Length: 142
Image 1 (cartoon, rainbow, N blue to C red):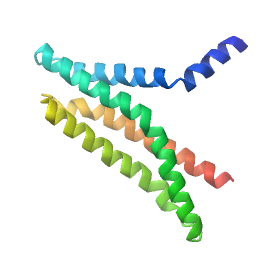
Image 2: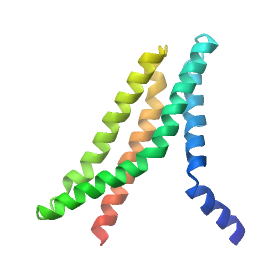
Image 3: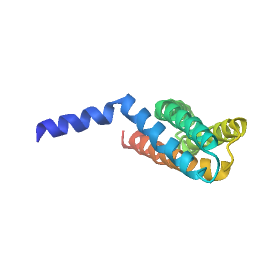
């Protein structure tokens, strides 16, 4: 049993696995969302989305941690007002993610843009909200 736990712990901390999963899962979604169009267009949409999702997977967690820390430090100097630490990091990431997705798929000529970006945007923004809430709660438990 301890070997299985050790394997799970390794997989949970393996950045490559997370990036690869983001690339494959969201890339496959984009191909599916564009399935009614010629295969080269659907595959390009999948490649673009997979690349974006893999990259976002790599940087999203660290970016949220840095922004949250920055807002927590600022709120400690202002008498504990830390609502910004709860709201601003997910808003920044959602705006950045939406802009990146829209721009990349516009440049790639993705035919079903809204369907293509809906799932990755929702997943990444939900993650940002929930992970930032976890960081915010952890900061209040200290």
